[in-house]
Each structure stands twice: as structure tokens, then as C-alpha cells.
Image 1 (tube, rainbow, N blue to C red):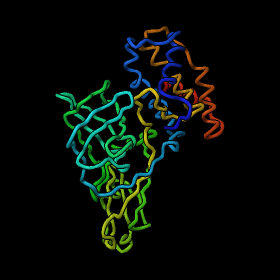
Image 2 (image 1 turned 135 degrees about the horizontal axis):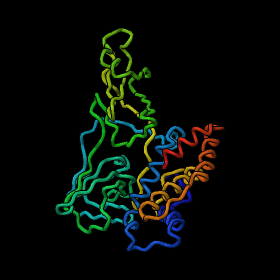
Image 3 (image 1 turned 90 degrees about the horizontal axis):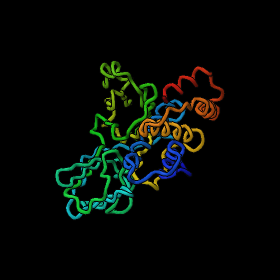
Length: 305
């Protein structure tokens, strides 16, 4: 998580107090929505300023051909406050399981999340919007599903890629060759692996959330491929968790966005945050790019509303 100062509890409480004029009650409907509302505010702000903030969320993911996963063989439980899954699976949890999709079943209820961090060989923390809101002492089934690619394709949807203006800044490198080239989908379709000039080249093309791969005739395969791309902020699911947004202007803008959401949820009179937003957006651009035109600031303010 990028913040060093702002926990979910502090972040939500600060916004709520400014909007409602006091502390919230556990019986308040927005209390039960707090994680979803915080996630919505932060994702909205980071998406609006992806042109500036994408570099803060860059990750590198090594992709290997792996069709294996984990399934429940013993007892399993889920602690909602810390979003921790404890389960005896057919194999041990490992740090390499981070990013895997997890499906949990309790009776006829199904829950979906993603492994966010490794705790122990039998415990991991999860992130996601479809996790249980209360503790489950005994789960009926758990699957940890590998999202690694087949040899000729890489599906990056599990990595939650961040797009700026529908464009994704992604790069690849391979252990098989240093000649790695990005192609448009049209160029990829007509690329000839047997052409002498392509013999030692690995090419790729992004279509939606799928990266298609092809390689020259001198290569036996794509090798171990590493993807570098910006990822959407990690969703929060417990109160002491730090929010995944940079301290300073970004977190201040996210706080204002959460206040806007709470004003709507609590049916409070509208508040014009334009002046505060103008200050913090100008500060954000000053940090990342230098001076910014007034029109751009106004467009960003409009997008946040």
C-alpha cells in the first residue's frame, strides 16, 4: 500500500466527520459500506489521474506456464476484520501465490477474491469486493486458481491493469531473446515467424486483457516472460489497512472524492469543492509535470464530480 499515514479507519472517519459533523455509528448503513466506498473513491481518483499516477503503481509479473492450483483438503475459515483466509489445502501457500484468484463457498454462498499477501503456509490475506463481510468459522470449499498464461497467450485481467484514456502502458521482456517487439493486432496477424529477419524475435500484441505471443523460427518458445504494467490500487477490506494512494495531493483529492460520495449517500446538501480541488490538482501536476493549464484542471474537476 502506497500511503504511510492513512489507514482505512482514519481515511473514512476524516471524511465522515467533515460531512456529517460527528462520528458515525456502527448502525449507520454507510458503516457497512465503508470499504466499498473507500475503494470507489480511490479508484476513481487514480483512474482520473492515471496519466500522472500510473508510474506509482507499476508492477513486474513473471509469467510461467502453470495449470496447477490449490484446493481444500482440510479445515478452512475466514476472518473478515483482517481479510485472512486460513485453510489446509492440497499444498502449502507460497509467496508466488500472490495474485491468484480465490473462490470460497459457505453453503450456497460463494465469495471471490484475490490473494493480496502471504502470511504462512496455511494463511493468506485477500482483497476484492466480493469477500464475506463477517467471519466464517468453517468454509465448505476453497479453490486458489492460477492465472498464469498458456504458452501463446497471457491474460492480464487478474493483474487489474490501469488504463489511461483506454490505453495501457505495458512492456515485456523474455529470457529467450532480447529482441522483443510490440505489434498492433493487424501487424501481429500477418507477422511471419519463418522470415529470416524475424527468426530470433519475440512479438506480442495486446487485445483487450489478452497478450498474444508469437516467436521466430530460431526460438523454441517465448521463454520466461516478464510483464511490466501499472496496476489499479489494491482494494481495502479491513480498518487498519493502509490505503493504496500516495500521501500528499493524491490522498487529499481522494478524501474530497469520498466526501462527495458520502454527501450523496447521506443526502446532505451539496457542497462545492472546486476551490479545494483546484489547489490540490494544481499541486499534483506541479509535482509530476510542472505547470498545468487551467482548462486541464477544470476538466479534471468535472471528471471527479
